[in-house]
Length: 287
Image 1 (tube, rainbow, N blue to C red):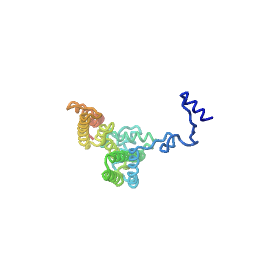
Image 2 (image 1 turned 90 degrees about the vertical axis):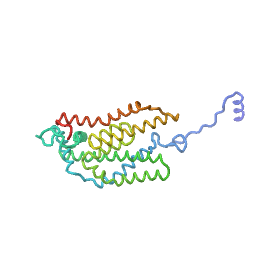
Image 3 (image 1 turned 60 degrees about the vertical axis):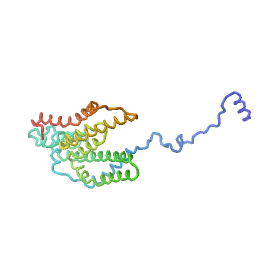
Image 4 (image 1 turned 90 degrees about the horizontal axis):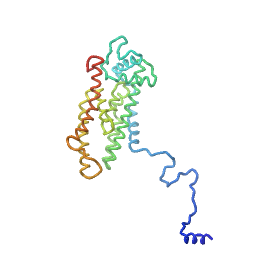
């Protein structure tokens, strides 16, 4: 009977449906290579590298937790007075001053302290500065780990392993930043900005400018970084366009200048803003 029905279907031009197979309960549809948990996505290599960077930097930071210097008490004191409504003062009845600290760092501590509802005191502000500094350094280490993976993926064999080994050893044994991460000063935040600026990410020029605003000695580094990066990006863009691959030509000097000027403005702008605010508040553009 079944063979007669198939012959009749072929004569009439209708396809014969075969037996239907249902997936067993609890098994996701698809082949064995598909993920059995719906909605789960395998982490990217950059995410794995970031997690590795955090794990490598954490032991040294925890080992040296407790290290600090007396300079960390100055921005913590100013931050405590800000939270008490006294303004940026070193002494409650004293004059307005930045206390020779990076302008804005005490306000940054006060904002974090308000967010976590810490005690508005000297040691309450210091504890917040130390804890958030540790998070900033771990964030920088995560970026470094992700960057190491990206660099290693562009190499082969021994070069890739060598790049990963050198980077991993540097993060694991980075005693200075491990110590300064929990010191309560701006060092880990500056390290985070520098790490973000070191790669061609969105906002890299602004990150370099923020680092230079809190550490003015970094301004030459930031300017060299921005100018060199713009030069190489313009040259690479023109080479890609000339080779016929997907890309666009930046053009000559005018095109390069059009890319360089906004990057320089984002780099120099924060330092100019800090100097202007100092002039308005304290009557001088420098600490």
